Image (cartoon, rainbow, N blue to C red; front, side, top):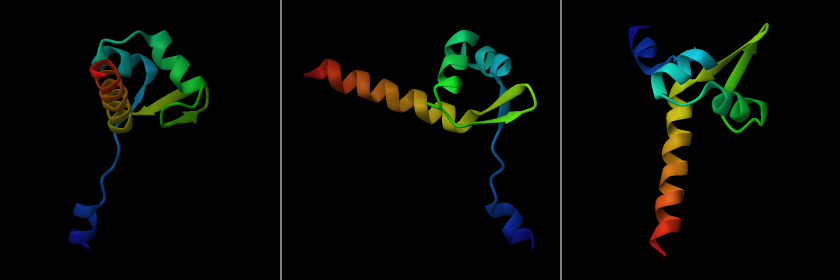
Length: 72
């Protein structure tokens, strides 16, 4: 049973406000991404919880796309 627990990675779920604090991005920007379903999130009552690891992946993908586009 211990081996199975080691394989399961529980995602870090943060509110929009917490995500903004950790990244330095505006809450409104993150909220827009959530409302447009551009990032991974769950809704719990009135709050949106952002999957932080997936959000970082999203930001890195966007950054790579900008860098590739600027290199042409």
